[in-house]
Image (tube, rainbow, N blue to C red):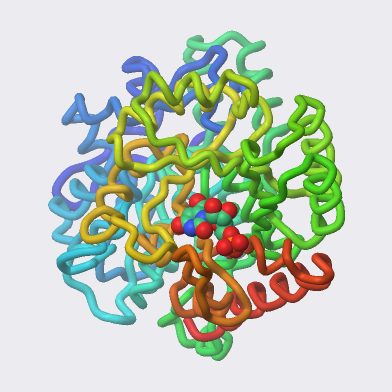
Length: 494
Ligand SMILES: O=C(O)c1cc(=O)[nH]c(=O)n1[C@@H]1O[C@H](COP(=O)(O)O)[C@@H](O)[C@H]1O
C-alpha cells in the first residue's frame, strides 16, 4: 500500500494533495493512458504517459511540483534545480519560484554563437544541482542533462521524477552516482487505479508483465576523469561512443555508436571502385575494420540489383552500415523519386544517405517521407573538403538548424569540423589521409588525428588512402588504428 501520510506533508508555499488524488487526476486528464501504444523505440506498450498535458491544469502543475519537491527532500542540499527539457521545464520553474530555489536551464541544442552556453543561469563550479524529470524509463534523458551539467563542473547527486516506469532507469543512474527519487512508480499507479476500480485486472497484469519484460540493463560506462577517481566531485565527464549510443534515440545512430565502440573503429571506407566484383571484394576484406562502407553506386559500370543484395549480406556479416553518398540536392518531390525508385532503389538497401541543405528543408522532408518508415537515416552536408567550395559563412549554422528541425531522420553531418556539442549528432569527415595534402582536382586532406582529436569529429572517411594502397587491408588497419588512437587521445585530454 502507498504511504499516503508521506505523500501529503505540508510544504513551503503550498501543500501537496495525497498521492491517490494525484494519480486519479492524472488518469482523468489522460496523462496516464492504457491501451496499445507504439513507443519512440518502436516497442508496443500497454501504458503511455503523456505528462505534457498537465501544463493545461495550473492547480495540478502546482500539486505535481510540490510532490516533486517533497520527494527530493532527502538530506542533500542543492544550490539549483534544472528540469530535463521540455516537459519538466515548467515543473522545475514551479519548484524554483515556490521555494526560492535558483533554476538552471539546459539547452537541448548547443549554441555555437553568442555566449555558446549550453547551461543558462548563474552557477559556479562545484554547485550541486537537483535534476527534475517527468517520467523515467531507461534513465537516458536524465543522464543527458546530468552530463551537460557535469561538463560545466556542476555536480549532480540526486534527480527527482514524477513517475518511475521501473524499467531500469533507477539502477542505471545509480551506476553513474545519481540517486533517483520518484513521486510514484508504475506499480503504485496500477495499485491506486486498481483499488479505485478504474482498471481491469487483465490490464494491470498485462502492464506489469510488460514492465517486467522490458527492463534496460544498467551497463553504462561514462568515463571518469582522474580527479573523479580521487573523490573530487567537480567532475568533467567525457562521453565515449558507447555513452552516446545510449543517449541517442535514432536506431541507426545507436547502432553506429555501438559498432564503433565494439569494433574499436571510427573508420568509414569510401569504396569508390567501378565494378561490382571489386566493391564486394573490398567490402569483405575491409569489413572487419570499418563502421561504415560508403558507396557511389552510380560509378559501378556493371550494376545489377544482386550487387546491393550481396553487399547487404556483407554488411550483416561484418557489422557495418551502408552509406550511399548520393548527395541529393534537388527539391523535395524530385529527391523522393531519386531515393525510392529508378535503377538503384537506394532506400531499399542504404542505411544512410546524405543531402545538401542548399534547396531548403523541403529536401529533408521529401527524403524523410521515404526513409522514415524504413528506419533510414540522413546526413546533411554542412562543410566540404574541396578547395574553393561555397559552403562557407553561415551555411553550416543554417544546416545545423535544419537538422535540428528533422532530428527524427537526420543523425549528423558531413563536415570538416564539429558543429555542435550535442552528443546525438554524428560528425563525419571526408578528405583524410595519413599525411596532409591535396589531389589535382581540389581535394584537401587532413590526418586522422587532426580530424578526430583536434577538430573533434567522430568518423573519418577514407577513400583512395585505402583503395589505391598496395594492400587495402593493411591500409585499412592503419587508418583504423590512427583514427581510434586519436579518439582515445581526445578522451584523455577532454
Ligand atoms: O560527402 C562526402 O562523402 C564527401 C564530401 C566532401 O566534402 N568531400 C569528399 O571528398 N566526400 C567524399 O569522400 C570521398 C573521399 O575520397 P578520397 O579523397 O579518395 O579519400 C569521396 O567519395 C568523396 O565523394
